[in-house]
Image (cartoon, rainbow, N blue to C red; front, side):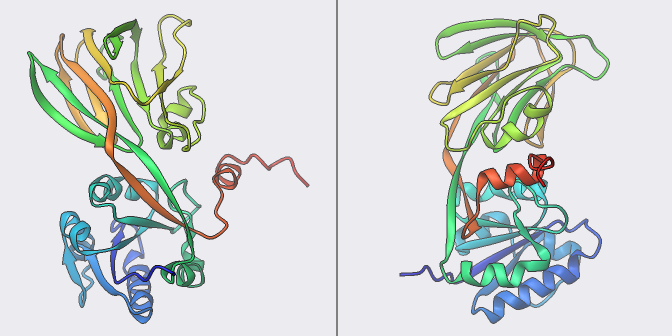
Length: 291
């Protein structure tokens, strides 16, 4: 039987010009579809939209059985990490060009969302990274990432030297501007611009991509996602680590960053007929030579 959703969360890129009218139009549509609607708290406060509940992400995860995210991939990243632990399915509505994760054009939202709300959709699960920073045997930072974990050199300093272990096995010492550990979702983000390959989201693996390595033999590698990656700061000043948009700066020599597969996954709902390869064609212009 088709799934019937009850309570929808609405999350928006509230900094975008004209977002209030778009959100109000979508909210009115969802109500007409028989759904209760609650806005994410920051979205409600910054747009001034009244007449709906305003809930924190944790409250949205506990109370809503579906979330609509209006904006771009960055907006989706921010809320997806917070709702993943609740198993809340996400639908991305893009205001501009189609994103990798926000694939419903805002101009077509009504005709696209109506059958999805009635239960006619494609469902996809994406793996996440989790980990943290250890100093002198103590955890000083923990976070999740949907795209990547990036260790970077300081803005004014020279290269960093990193010691990389996978599980109990030493893999490499790397001198570079940094290192990216990316999920399949993140393989089309920073890792791609740094020379890494695209990893299909159906593959249970990570990418490890050096950023401007000193030795050209240090190449990107695809790893199984079953082991823990450990990155130790050996040398270099003002190094930092970022889990998506959450950063810890001023890492010290001896600090160790651990990265592993999260127990939580992100659930995406797509319109019927959605295709990952079609998304790549549109975003990367793979069909530019066709007539």
